[in-house]
Amino acid sequence: MTNYIPPTESALMQRLEECVQKAAGPMEVEAWYRIACLGDFFAEQNGWVFNGWSAVILVLVKRHNWLPEEIERMSVSHLAIVLTEDLVNHKLTPLQSSFLAQWMKRQQR
Image (tube, rainbow, N blue to C red; front, side, top):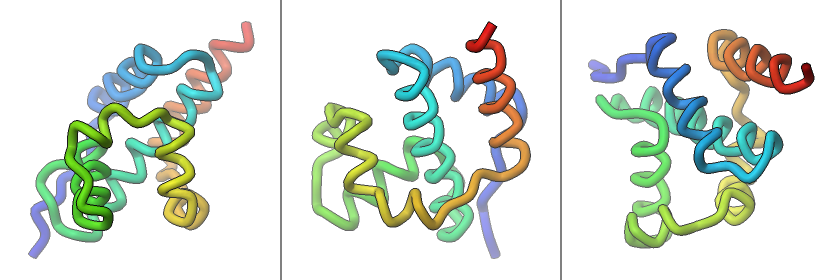
């Protein structure tokens, strides 16, 4: 039995806003967002109650024995390198993709 609960629309909006705060520009926003959404996939696969960034941290702690503080200090480009295979094989859900597309469209104005 799984404990996983998919993020709500409001949670995805909050996530996107947090990514904007972390990022140096639109490309970084997209990268941070995709990494956080990858965490949803990790959570679903493992039946975890938490998702997003928390799930990414747990996966990296388990894989590499890194401390959470080390992971939190990593740049988005370093995280993308470490998670390359996962990111290449992961597709955003339609809802996740929709939020990202809407945000990107607003940035083009």
